[in-house]
Amino acid sequence: MLWLLVSAVFLWCAFREVRDSLVAPAGFELPRPIYKPYLAMTLSLAALFAWPPLHRWSFERFLSARATELAENHPARVHCNTLLDTLLDPEMLAGGHADPRTGKIFIQPPGCSTLRAYLSHPGSATPHDLWSLGLFTHESMHVRGERNEALTECEAVQRNYRAAKLLGVPDGIAKQNALDYYDSVYKRRRNLGPMQSQYFSEECAPGKSMDEHLSDSTWAELEVPSR
Ligand SMILES: [Zn+2]
Image (cartoon, rainbow, N blue to C red; front, top):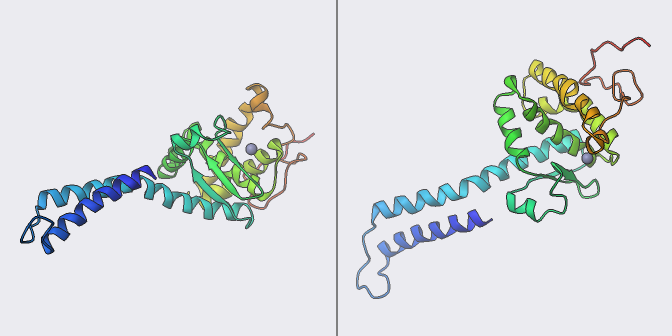
């Protein structure tokens, strides 16, 4: 918002420069010719300050539409928090949070920028990139109606393949990314202490009780281990 206000100030300066070239400003008898370097500078600065919030807004709209699809048409609204938003957020220590009643999803920095970076190079995704994919899918599952963290995360694990494809990742890479998330990011939670282990369950595996048997599940073609 602050950036848009600064942009508006520079836009007003540009407008005043054009207006004064058409109508004599106060204290002058004739209109003033436009000083082109000044006009170019104010317009450039207006665009420069408007770009980050508009870019974020368009990414939020994109994520909101995809989250709504993942949440099986429960309306989702994604907000990428700025640092200031996070400082004022009562859940500032969480990577993100969502309210199943309102459909609002808040993603703390650097979640959105990491997700955007991941989408630009999904073929060489790092564990941190995969974390941002999992975070997006996890919050979408809350909007779908799940509140229990272990169940929410397992639903996300099974839908990360679908989520990556919805976000535009090519099929084969989306599958590999989703499996990598399950094998590395998810399974590591088991050993990371009580805060992380609440998101983990041994039952979240092919053929176990949390398996939803989705036709496009991340682990759809994995062999069920014999017992
Ligand atoms: Zn959660």
